[in-house]
Image (cartoon, rainbow, N blue to C red; front, side, top):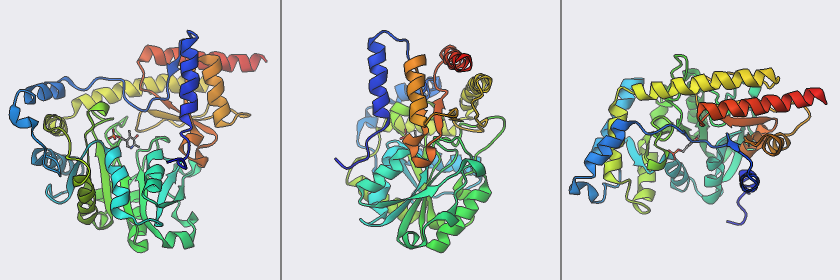
Length: 385
Ligand SMILES: *Cc1c(COP(=O)(O)O)cnc(C)c1O
């Protein structure tokens, strides 16, 4: 535990709290969770299920059939992928839980795990906790953060058992077409490496863009699992409900770990989540429209102060370049201390995140506008100096 890498962002949290105590009006764009409410029909379903005493028992270990069938129906409708709800779908207490428990289920101590850099920090720490060795899968701004398999050390690649991928991506907001997933599945098949694809933002998309599933790539079920979550798409972060689909053996191994660790999620929550997945998802589209408007407003403000950022097709993050003359940490520190705006320095997501910062659009529009004004003001001061 003592050797775990320090959580870089905790330093910023402390600074933020100090400023708050001094009465500074801090705007936190560092939070990676939606501010919008869970859809009313999902809450109503939960309330209804809470009146049935049958629902207070233990859930089946793998999750309710009703929930697993809803996940399978969602995959068929959204991606044209057929899944067996018995063997190819497992309910999770949030996808983070599943990601963390997958590691001890599929690797032995000393095995190598490929983790995207920059990437969601849980992959690395979970691999570490399972005794694995991490090998960075380098991602580059120049090619849209596609995996660059040829850059991997051949020796270490030999010992690799598992590879994480995440599109649409946190923190970079990069998306991947089906061609990227086909290439990854081919690479994994050749190298005999399993794939864990994290699709937490699969439904948070803009301007007609639809994110594919890795399960659409031929041969994916032989080598890959895909994690999904209701947290970001249905604003249900605290409910703790997600799922994993795909390769039967990996799912079975994960189910063994989980059945000896937890007893799945509370039944009413699974039933409400099943209803959300079976809905027409119009609420998701409404939420996405809100994020898109916020995003445009923020991108315009950033442009005015010459901060470069690509317009994202998905996620509620903007991944922007820090102005010249600053490191990520220096710039984030300056934004916090001089403008009272919290952002996440890119290096918190791996060394290749250096030179960038992540800005979350999950605050109400008026606060976002205020943050944009403060960033602009800071930019003006630079020009006047
Ligand atoms: C938020 C997030 C998760 C975790 O989601 P839960 O289902 O709430 O555990 C997983 N992966 C990424 C990339 C995330 O941003």
